Length: 332
Ligand code: TYM
Image (cartoon, rainbow, N blue to C red; front, side):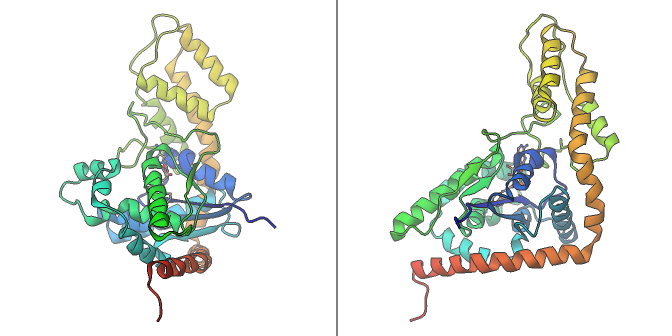
């Protein structure tokens, strides 16, 4: 039997999942689990860069695990695990760090951004964040990584580390991972405040867990800023963002109708926003309804964690051992 390609992806444990996480990553995870060898994790080490309250961190890991499962990820079909339950990752990370250079790490967009946002806490974990992410991926010898557009630079760095390592040790040990997005182009879900990106630190999120009233309220408040006064006018950024959502969640004929009403200036933003909110809720409501029960079941969640960690440690342990050997760390 042919071996299935390996897919690896993860989400930081910094609160509930939002629509960016869902459309940029989670939806792909769920869709891929039948056809690929999928390993999905919750990146709790990565969330430590902001030094969160320990009990909050633990709660976030739990809620994301429950959301993964509620969204349809099946822990029997794929390896679902928590990053810190697999300490082999730390060894892989340490070894990989020796081939990551200060200059390239300092130039990373995410690092520069975080260093600006938290000037009193520019810790070493922030700097080496991309190396840890590369270790997550490369330790699995993953072929594909489903991520949104915002993570492409980190993925590119993982590819560079892989190529560099192979070249340095004259080996083909490292596999070069590729981005994966089912619909072709990597996705970037915009914020509803007219800004570029939906994100937790931007504070502009619609969470999978938001109830109907909250989702509708958030869409009602979405920035639009302009009404078209001439047929076929150019849209501004906030309106383009709403149409982006509409294309993603609504039927093509609904999209065409609204576009036509934009072009002939008859559009009513209230209707547009309600349409998007209703169609988003068709996706998120069933997930939210399953979530509560899963979240409450401590025994089940711990079982999933243990099962995931056991399976991952077995496969990753072999790869770390191979890496040690290549680098000369072995018995006499
Ligand atoms: P994180 O937790 O910020 O986001 C998790 C996933 O959601 C995607 N995403 C988005 N996609 C489209 N539009 C948005 N507005 C949006 N916001 C978030 C992200 O692209 C990501 O796929 N460093 C990673 C976590 C990580 C990881 C890994 C991912 C650690 N190790 C190994 C893949 C492989 C992160 O902070 O994602």
